[in-house]
Image (cartoon, rainbow over all chains, first blue to last red; front, side):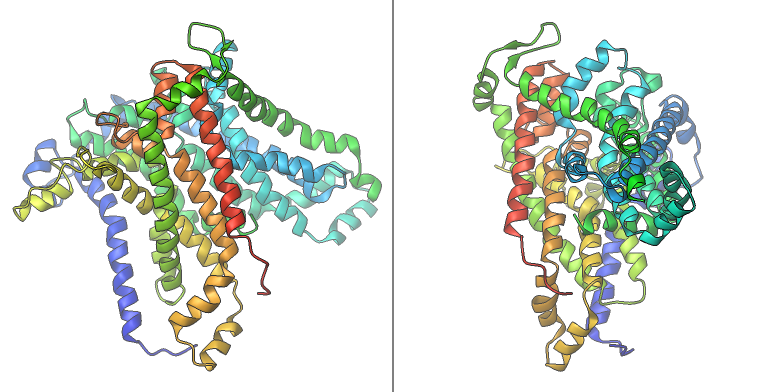
Length: 277
Length: 294
């Protein structure tokens, strides 16, 4: 089917997708443009471009809205979770995907269970337990559950990657006298870089956006993560719309940037994670 | 070589840290949560076993009725619309060459954005004086109170939120279907065109049957996602007005962390868990098919 003929059907498809693009980008562009306006401008001239770039909204949201601190907290939580989940996830995946033991299948099922279980079901026991051992209002109290809920996807994708590596590699490494840890760290892990990268991105994005756990576990303003601080700053008691819009932009810009650079990898990861599910 | 790969100590080193973490943070808490659901338990007291009391209270709880109704509405709405829209988008996108990646990335974009932020954004778009109503006002139409009109059985805000959820997550279904469609052998289509099939017909008789396993995957993701649904509702309406837009997750949050009725909230959580497992099971059975040769 290499016909270059433009049929009416193709034109209709393009028109359809152009409309979809407008539906998808218009809200984002609108919030972006309003965030540079003064509060008065929103009502007098809602859809025009801002008359001048009004940066104050951003500085206010960043400092008084505590979004700056929240951004740092979010980064801390997400980066640590990302590193730990890559490490713990890949060791488990290597043991399940490459090593030979009887109950490996069962252990896999145990980890995969986490995919079906909503985080809501563990909120209350974790909340009461963490309060007792000093993990409430503590960023580590977020990292532990985030890590736990990131592991199933990581293990699922990484096991697939380890299984697909050629047997000869492991065999020759054995003959050369590598220990099992060397086989993992020096041979298999470097060869599964793509998988690691993809799962890392997915973990990062998912945890960056997480609201419920963060809202329940953290009440100290200086430890809140971005979605929580945002939800608190933007609400019915605030009447300065342009500041709230600036806050929304601050919250979504990092993921938009990450996405525009890595969109292909993120998409690959998503499909890799589900195709065989 | 086998000796190396059967090294029990190494396996333990590799698996145990994650296994222990998983058990402590996920498995034990779930068991505890199920136990708490049979207990009188709040912020001040220790859990005491009371049997089915919490579940009996759930039956006469009006907010719970609304929450169940809305959650089921969401479940059905998102399964159906995501299936239809996802298939349409995927089917059409695979038919164009130029700009396919661009359109794909644009439609998938909201999936990676914070639904807390997007919820707030859409709350403004549907607020009484901004966004859509500003556009309508230009043409002299007085727009409805999108997020406050609670007259109907399924109130208007629920439809609005369901639309936003579809807008945000349809990219995921589309992506999954596209991945599956691109795995179908092209010669099948060529053969069908030679036999005189139209594109629509080949979609119906080749694509659809071959992507059935993916429908199961995508739909169970949708189903679990819609049952867990929290961020958008919390930031768009907070369950209001008058609790008419409560879903299971917001009800659980309110009972557990506003009124600190831990036992009662655990009962809601247990029901949520059962629903999730049930839906995964059902969907995978309905769409279970023999694997075609692709």
